[in-house]
Image (cartoon, rainbow, N blue to C red; front, side, top):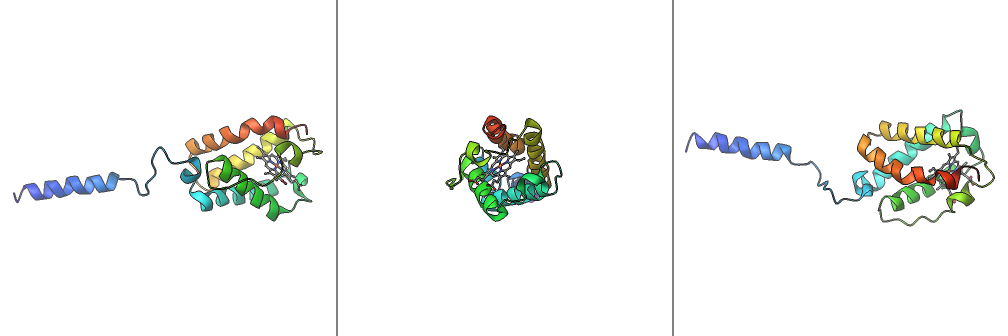
Length: 144
Ligand code: HEM
């Protein structure tokens, strides 16, 4: 028995060490896996920082109400990833109407989003899931 106890303890401790820190299971929404509200807010804040410093596209945002844009982007990402939010902004066509955005502008915006997600340590797998939601919006954003 004396010999068995250390072995048993080692097995039990091993099981604890390999258990996930947070209960992140496969059925969690993308919103939950991004870290809920603080996670989405971190992605949006870093994205706006990257866009702001991006000479290719920051001119488009010079007359925008950035606090309002932040709020709407958070709502939009939260809703699209299965979070408990309702997007209250305008349609993508309407929001970008008159800007005549090109594919290049869109690519720059996506690059900034990727850089932002990398900065706030969103895993490459989750980044792909986010991009799969927003990439298809290209036709609603470009050329409006
Ligand atoms: C999938 C890509 C994009 C998404 C999901 C997105 C999302 C949004 C949202 C939610 C709004 C606010 C809507 C509202 O005012 O009701 C908005 C506004 C805006 N977007 Fe985008 N956007 C995208 C791409 C782009 C790109 C590529 C640019 C420019 C390079 C851009 C520039 C702007 C600007 C300047 C505004 C503010 C318009 C204003 O001040 O009235 N967006 N976008």
